[in-house]
Image (tube, rainbow, N blue to C red):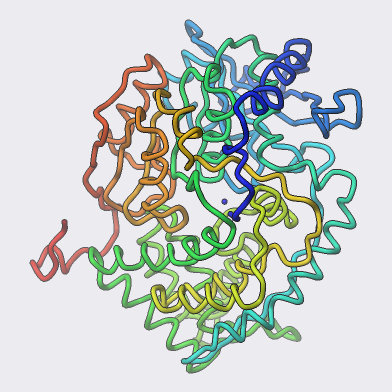
Length: 510
């Protein structure tokens, strides 16, 4: 997956060049990635790699991270290297090459490289912190401001403990340094210019790289954008509303699916379901159900599973074998939801919070957090409070100095990237990175083209089964051909989604 920070885009451009240009490029020229064969089924040529980067680029001989990478070498005439990042922040990315590998033309033309960013996954050192205990309410009317106040101390304790445990490196894991690492890897593989696909949080890496090194960009695909001009408070508010935006779209195309969400929530609020085993009670309430369900909002292909989950809750109330099996499935689903959170992506031991709180300088206080929660609940009454009550406090307890990413908003920062020919992909009802952020990214990069899908996929390229989405983005990566400034692609309904209301003419599919 931002906070108001002192905008580096307002600094003189000569200072920016000194901090992010020649020094980083020069150190990258001498660096080498150590590759060894690590074949897996269907990919016998796969290689695994390590790459050392300094904690602090102003002290290149000091302590170093050892980044973990994987590379699928090009199977045909090679254009260069396509680096990828799947999002997070805090999500391991070394296996993210597998998505572009599904495209024959991309796997023939590029070495496909994924990497675990500093502090993440198999990269050493990496975060290994405990998550705070979160007890969800279960009431028809929840005071989410009060819930947020109750959660904040536990989040602050977890963050303080994580900062102590990760004291040696936590201040160096921000996106500005990840961008330096990416540029060093670009130079290490011998590419004069970068080809990169960033998804979700990876779009923050993408736009910051484009801003820092505009002359070193070959092609950058920004898929499911985060805003290039935001703050942590803005992120918490907009992100907390996005699940409800996806639900509203689902309601328009499949009222039965939306009804299943609400009815199941209400039934569990009225009567919790014990999904535990003998000797261990695990009560499942209405908002626990929503936490399980939200992971299915991120991909349209998962929307039919929402009604299946709702049916599972009903079955789990049955005494006997069928009920036992349903309760076991729900236990696993709840465990996954607890591990992944409402973003639907494992962030790995407070890495998401630490990286984001380095990237943005503001730290919303109790009064501002309460105001954000009220605003969210007013506009996103189903899931908004559940997400905002915890997200708004995600920076509580951290005391490290932020290293803010640039905000592309000032006249100078906009001029710096005005001519960059990038590609942007977004959705109208994305449950994690809403369309408003895609539009902001398009405004920041006026020479880019934007492909928008009508629907709710979070991350589109090669995941929508839509030629309208995939073809221009793939062609761009391969040949640098620019599509029209804005393309809109029709909603592609997933198999199994109940669209009987549309078929009967009771709803109009727009």
